[in-house]
Length: 305
Image 1 (tube, rainbow, N blue to C red):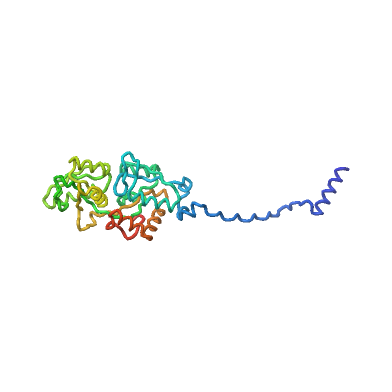
Image 2: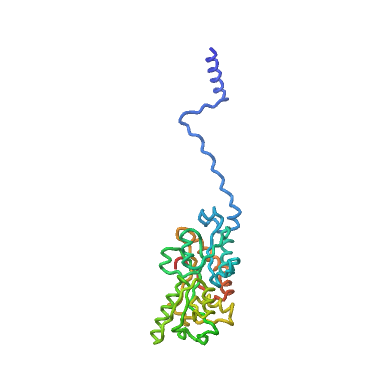
């Protein structure tokens, strides 16, 4: 009897609307859409933060390769201080991306490319020669050009050289893995064609090592880019001078120099966007002029030229 009373009471409550009974087959109302998230402080302050692939947003940093290649990277002994043109460009990256920089100092080009491929590093401002072969493996943003040059000592055997042909038969260094070796080979062919002896070549790891070899008389000239030649003379003009391999600016001895990242990183378009902003607001021109590289500027940055 108590059971019947309970059922009657439950029925009365339902009828009165005190209890709600779900109706089979009816759909529950859809929840209201969540409000759009407010922009983070980082994204608001750094206009390209949202363009970064998620892994870099989450890490909050980019690992930049540095190698002692003035004027782009100038590294004090022991790696305590890194200055130069690349440091100023790197600052623009951090400003626009809202992440921190973690530096990694490596000896030269082979080591830098290996670090990128093994994910020990994220980006190398370089700049390095944007060859077709490298562009098959990496994304490269061309932002400056260069010409092959020979730095010579003002007190050495070739101190009176007025053109590159005066260095036929000389011992000339090149940075290990760089295209300068190919330029020296082409230069030697020109020498032979003129009835002169070819140059001898020697590979060295970086600019400081090359200058030490030049001072010690182990080499007669340092084969390098015009940018490095200009910087070397500016820093120690009483010791060195330089000649371009082709004074007429021949394309054979002119290179497209670029930033390099892996294709898998997704950073190529980000790098291009940052350089485009630097071209647009005059920062690019100002920096190249400041470092004496104005005549090596290009009209616009190009991804995989």
